Image 1 (tube, rainbow, N blue to C red):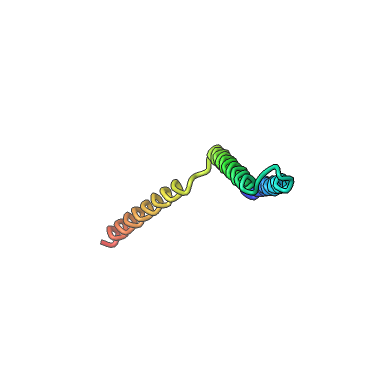
Image 2 (image 1 turned 90 degrees about the vertical axis):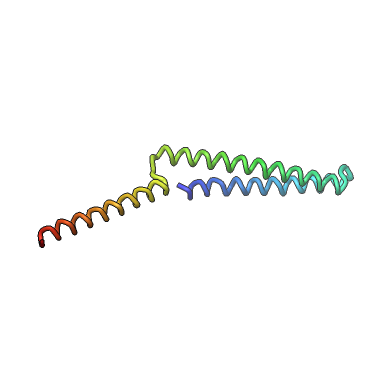
Length: 109
């Protein structure tokens, strides 16, 4: 399941990187045409980058939330639940062993 998600996200990341590259190229062209100063271009690149980072974080959070909801719908036990069950089984095994020893001792004695 995670492999399919990863395969779906990697092309998106490529598009984001390609878009950033195209934006930088367009901004460089504006600098060359003297429509932007280098300082303005740098500021614009920083703002576009920050916006892209924020949007990527929002997408990532949304995907994580969707995956979590999907897993919850599958009714799969969490690690915490599995550890609790393991602990409970170990305690029951110990109780059984104790009872078996008591029965064995009573038979011998």
